[in-house]
Amino acid sequence: MATNGSGAWERYGRALHAAMAEVLIDPRRAVTMVEGLPDDSGLDRALPKNTARRLAAEILGKHGDDRWQTARQWSALLLMPEGSDL
Image (cartoon, rainbow, N blue to C red; front, top):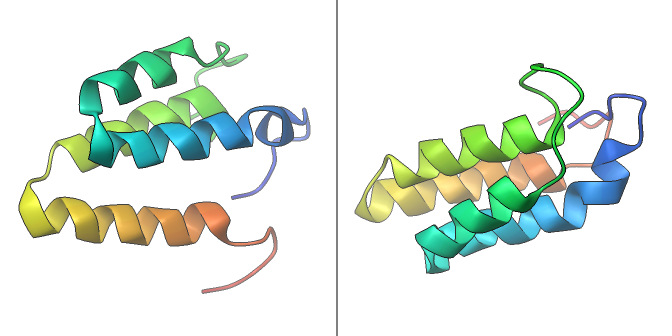
């Protein structure tokens, strides 16, 4: 995912990744972690906290294998170097 120029991804990326992993392990703790991220400067869905909320909600809205498949897809995007193509 591209940075928004503010360095927010660099500052909060590790916490975002941890929260996304936690969604699969302990969903309640994941929600606490996501809500504990610093507030974004706006409503853009690409900002870190907004992205974390969106990803967590999408994963939690699925069950069983669908949840794991979605998590694998999102993790590939989160770990993809900036400027890379799938």
